[in-house]
Image 1 (cartoon, rainbow, N blue to C red):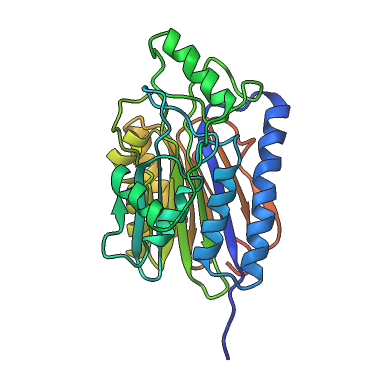
Image 2 (cartoon, helix red, strand yellow):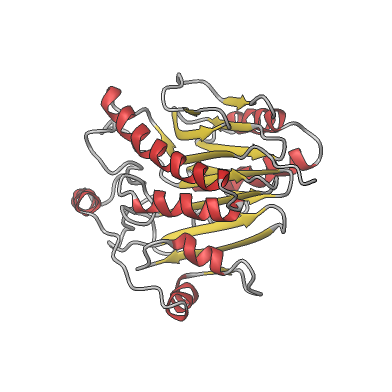
Length: 322
């Protein structure tokens, strides 16, 4: 008799400084919860972890509030270049695209590459793949992101990155924020998958590559999966996602792996966040930044990390079967 697992889900929409007042928190919470509800329903109906992750990433990419897909930030030359990756923990297959333009959902290219002999493509190759798949050309530019870029150009790009949430009313205007979206899912078969997508940090040097299409920022085995957000260079320096997952694979609990990895990151003064799941159903998150825009479903209820106090580093949630 086949034993079904209680599905679990956690998603994020970026990390950085605190949202402005209660209105900002509630607006982001509504966006995240709507996605949690739809994707968790898919998992309950028997969808695979890969299917759930792709759908969750699509919905986050389609929400102009987040820095991925529609609403992506502009690089220094005024162009949108996005990166995304998917990793199936069961097959341990990583696929992704780097600095792709004019597609609505970069995660669609990542899933298309899952069974390809060439599984990570950069700008020109990713554009060729989009044409082969007959994905229509799409302009994800929003007025808020355009105005943000125009202001920074007037100041000769003094800021090193753009805002993660595309709404000046929701954020502390004086603080830069880090934007990436991610989804980690455990399906009813006990399989884990993870996806991460980003528009980059904004105003960056042309050709800069984020962590989102690297195992440093998005990694899974059959034991655990992690999606990262924050300053990509810090995530790469720590090889954060792979570090946490390898520790779980080697026998540490998810909570222990996150705690050890984030303690090391604090010593190095890194600035990022991460979400994670393991095969036993534990849900975890961690942050060295002030805030992490994450929400989860533990099989019993929806929760989030939006109002955690500054200085809270790692949390882990266990449901009754986890």
